[in-house]
Length: 154
Image (cartoon, rainbow, N blue to C red; front, side, top):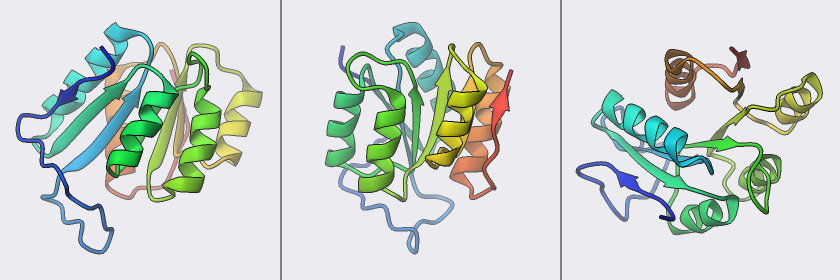
């Protein structure tokens, strides 16, 4: 399955505009993760956090780019190691084409060099797997509600 839309009342055709975004508006989150179990867990958990989250998943970066071309997302959560295009390349493309979209990168293959590179490229946060869900939730809340960036490793 290329991806799931996990929001009971998904609103299509909304344009994301920071000047018009109100606290009650739908927050669109795109999760890019090739491990189906983690992808579903994150999507379901985030959807359960708030009624105003529209969570969409993609198994690879190319599918993610297609979804971002269809509609704007407030937040991109991406694995770094993905088939074909990696998460750092996706981050670079996202920063260039959709600079309003914040990006959280996650990886099971973390290193200080990759963390530094991700931060230098503009990632909102860098999270090493395995992580505690509450930590991811806190970073997502910071990203969606304008808090300063921070890197987190568990």
